Length: 224
Image (cartoon, rainbow, N blue to C red; front, top):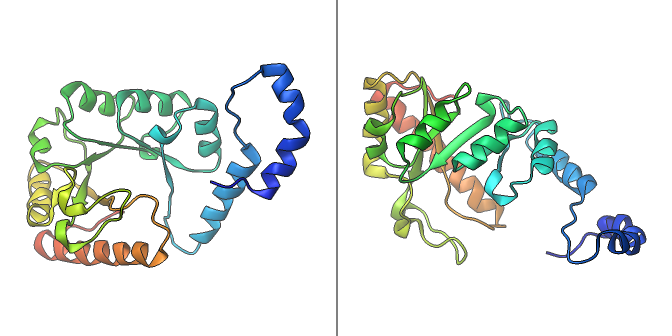
């Protein structure tokens, strides 16, 4: 990714001193740039009530960076016990943590449940009976299969091994209801590094349509 001119102006005057002090190689993060990008994102969605950005901890599991994300009001998307631990170390609240994993073990479920819990995001209907203590709030990761396309980077959703299929999604929520869940969310992940904004709009439209369908079948009112 090209370096921004603003980052160059901050970095280049100090670069010689940094190299002399730390030696090479090293990683350097631009806090001013991170905060500016975070503000731009928040401002872009400021008209959407309840919007909240969740940072993927696996993208950069650095406690200093996570602290910046917390200060900007972001939540944390975790996929492992280590990522849960890192998020809690910087005092992220339960509603600030989403735990999305696959082939999840009992130990991972118990870790997600600890310290007040997290938003539990299940990617397989078969995981429901494996949750030791089903929380009140449940979310499912939806895979639309052939209903959507992917891209060269992430691949095609129809080939993906993650997510509840369209034919199973209503049964997943109905079963969670029967097991005692009372609050619900819906999640999907179709494409990474997609710069065509129309694709994101189509994804939002797809999810809103699916919410209508699930509500008609189950009466569920979705929180997110």
